Image (cartoon, rainbow, N blue to C red; front, top):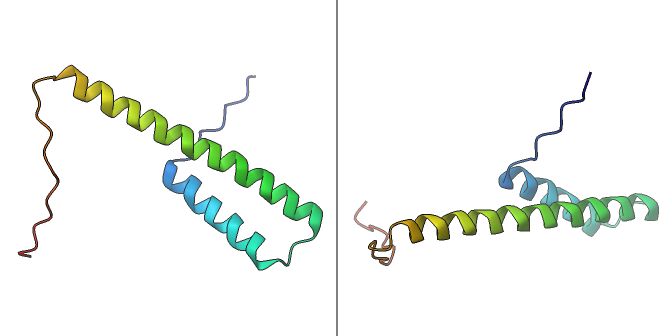
Length: 81
C-alpha cells in the first residue's frame, strides 16, 4: 500500500514553526547537535515559506493579467469605525 504524502503546511503554520525554532535557537540552551538540526529545519521552513509566497504572487499576477482592463487602486482603510 502506498504511503500518503504529507500535506505541506500552510504559510501561517510554516511561519509559526519557524518562529518557534528561532526562539529556541536564540535561547541558547540547546546542545550543538540539536541546535544544528533545528537550524536545518528552519532553513527548510524558510525556503518553503518563500516558495509559498512566490506561488501566491504568481497567482495574483495571473489573475490581474486575465482582466487587463481592471484598474489598480490604492487600498484605503476606513477610519470611521
